Structure formats: structure tokens, C-alpha cells
Image: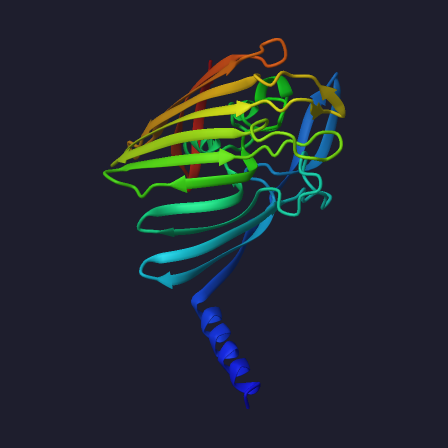
Length: 295
């Protein structure tokens, strides 16, 4: 009996916890047929990810009482046309998100692979909802290293810690740090700062009016590998990004203005640029029609 009673107590506790927890499966499968003319030759192909990325994930929550809740997110992207992994996500079981956190009356604290507040400015305000028609994706998506930085894209980051303050008077503050955990050729971590990301953002909503701004600072990792080649950099190399968006929903249409500026400490290998986009999203036949002007 001494051995059975603790087992019964544990089973009862686990049963109660399982009833309080909730786990959901979510995702999307998006495919389209692309037709284009390259060098006078028409080409047709089946592609994955037209309006949204193909992905599948698990998310769960559990109430701890007193308005406090723990949660997790696991999200994996894939190419639906051939079932393979997506570009730039080699070796990752959950390339989009892999994090755990706690939220309550004091805000939300989370750890793991998470979206940066810098990217959320694009995701929350782009009139096309970052579909194929988006004009600003080259400025955050994994692409030319000279644009997004030798350390990869700015959509999400590994080893990140994020604290989101409770919304007060329409204002929400985001504090985000991602640890680069830079390793040398022998596989030993040799720095506490190289590759680190520091990101602050604030979002204000008042009725139909919404505005969000972000500042991101990233230390460039020494000897980062790009396309299989070692890229020499200095300890002091860094990039800074300012990101800003504002919108107003008139009901019949929702105009949006976005501005992004990148500052590089070493422009010889890290391009500086600025981008401005003016667009509007208009409800049409149950969906959205949009117009963009990229400067």
C-alpha cells in the first residue's frame, strides 16, 4: 500500500493537469501554379507558399490560476510541392517557432526561437499580409547577406528572451534579446556578444489608428559562414535597424505607411539602405484588394 498510494496520487494529479491543459494543432498548406517567361522561354512550375507559408505546428496552454498561464509554440515550415524543408532551415525540427513562456498580469516572458519585434512591424502592417505581392520582404527575409546581415535574416532568432509589458492606455512595449552563442572552428563558444541581437519596439492602438516602431541592434559574428565561405569581420562590426509603420482603418480601405532604415558600421560588406512603402488594403468580395507604392 505504501507503494501504491503515491502512484495513485501522481496519477490523479496528472489527470487533473491534463484536463486543465489545452494543446492545438494548427497550420496551412498553400500551393500554386507559377507561369513565367525567362529569357523568352515560358516555364511552368508547381510552387509552395503563395499567400502564406506551408507549415504545421503545435501550441499549448495551461492555466496556473490567478490569471497566470504557461504556454508553448512549436511550428515547422515545409515545401508542400515536394515535402522538403524550407530554405535556410537545415537541421531545425521547428524552423518557425520553438519557445515556451509564462503570461499574466505582469506581462509575458518567453524563451526560445521567436519572432523579432522588428519583423512584427512588417507582419502586422503590410497591406498584402506578406504574400507574394509584398514589396518589403527583401528587407527582413533571408536573402542577400549584404542587406539582412551576415548572420542571416531578421524574421526570428534562436536563443531569444522576450518580455512584453501589459498593454496600458493602448501602448504595448516589447523587449527582446537573442544570444548569438558564437562558436569558433573547434565548436567552443568564444564570445558572449558576437551575433547577439537587441531589439526594442512599442505599439500604440487607439480605435482605428495604429502605430508601431522598432529599433534593432545586432553584433556581427566574427568569421560568420556565408554560402560555405568564411567572411572576416571585426569585433566592433554591427548593424542597426529602425523600423516604423502607421495605419488608419477607414472601413472602406486601410492605408499603411512603412519606413525602414539600416545603418552599418562596415559598409564595405554590410550595405546601408532605406525603404519606404505606401499602400492600402481594401475589402473586395470577401478578401482584400491592395495597392502598393515602393520608394
